[in-house]
Length: 132
Image (cartoon, helix red, strand yellow):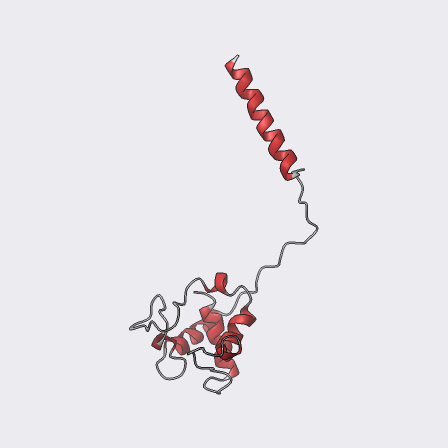
């Protein structure tokens, strides 16, 4: 008797869950899965890391903590989980280019606007930072 009650209870739960979620065994959306992001050349990421960690141009470590950076600053937020924080690389690039566009009181240097970094250097930094 207990086995029958347990089986009926399990079937009721499964049926209810299926009914509530509309589960038919097939996807309910017509969207195609998003394509995987193209792989970036590891050499570009390495160049971006060198600029980011370097104390002459990018100098991101002056203000940010980066996992394997030496003597990081703490003025800016730590650079971690960047894909989650910036799912759109263009927004990350825009932040590096001119952070004052989003926050006029930002302490971050507008690296592109002030021509501290070239377009190519900013692109390489974005590719590296997005891996963090």
